[in-house]
Length: 499
Image 1 (cartoon, helix red, strand yellow):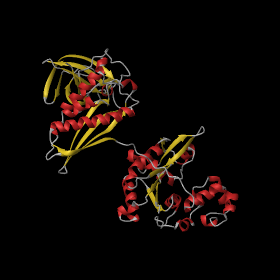
Image 2 (cartoon, one colour):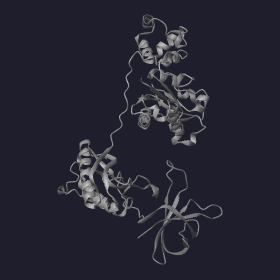
Image 3 (tube, rainbow, N blue to C red):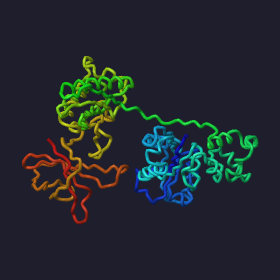
Image 4 (cartoon, one colour):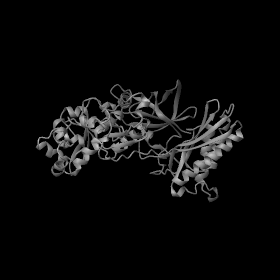
């Protein structure tokens, strides 16, 4: 006996917005997109719905109702993307989960509910988990997809329909709960057919002549007399390889052999799919039930078994086999596409220096730890903190050239630090300043060099920078924030150190 669950995420996009922008809670906002030379509301928040602003309304009319209405861009691909992610999450409840655009999921729950004790507990767990994640959800269970879909959206009765009771569950519901076409439901409304019981008992020939064959098909799907196709999602198979041992492995040499074999199999799959690993994790399952694991990372997508083995080789000593390891699992949780130009990336005979640098970075990171090596590129900004950007990989190219016409410090602080300064006014360089408890008397100074705030990014005052040298020969980059005010006081900061 088949059993299906319909999940209706009533405000899918709105709930997603509130998860990422909680400051909009309690405020009317809409998601809108251009449609036929006009901007149309695609989704409305609960507060906007209370004002009568609904999906399909022209944005100009919505603003007339609420002038300070917050308007966000509608991403047409977002519903499918969100539902796809939720469908993969819902596989914990059923191995067969389908996306039901634009705001629902369908689960083939046949033989699954008993694992939770009952169908009621099964549905409650699904709804509770989704609601705790911030989604407004309604669920229903029935023998057919059509009945579960209709009950989840249009019925206020008990959401679990007993086996074989589809007809009685549908009688009080409106015609559009059968997922009929809009012209058909409008025609039924004009004829006074406001509930399914008003026409469900009509002869099939009459229904076909008045409302078309599609109506009969939808009724059959809801009652279970007509087959309804079901296309479950297929999550990507993880890049994982397993190797079991006949005898428990206790030696470092045995562990290294296992790593080599697993990496060879893993890299074969990666090469076939045109991908490279950015992370690889080795899990060693000991016979005492404990799990040992080590992880490596690469500076770029890699499908070289020999290169990744060198990184794992540095960490073999940290694995404690104890009484022995009976199962090895190698997984690449993070992979990236491998460009065609990178097919010979690991061929050192080609003289590719990028390859050698990448492997050197990987070995240094494996020894010293991740996050110790950084590469920076120039960014198109005047504000010093924004003038550089960290490169993700060695293949990243700068959008602009490094500027050499302005003198900048070798070391730049991530955040300017406040200092106490004694300086003539209005624009003379400081005579001395106190930094971390030490007094620095200024011997030489150059400036001011004014850098204005980037108004299109944030508001704020300008900075007047000075390059100063103290009596001990230390050279610093300091600035005054804004103009002197009426009390002739100003805020000073240190931002960098020259060589």
